[in-house]
Image (cartoon, rainbow, N blue to C red; front, side, top):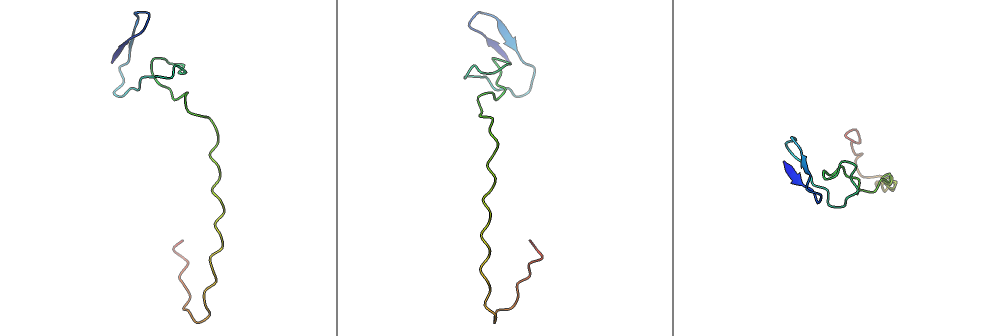
Length: 66
């Protein structure tokens, strides 16, 4: 793929798939390097509430498949 830049220079990529940067934050401009994405850690999943107790007359559940 070839991209002609504003200054007339040509940027070439031989990769099979490329993404063109539109935010201009990429260190490899004009190719996207995902610099536009925020670099924050994903929040931890909230703890699961305890499962409700089963009635005493109910047969016990098989919990080995978890």
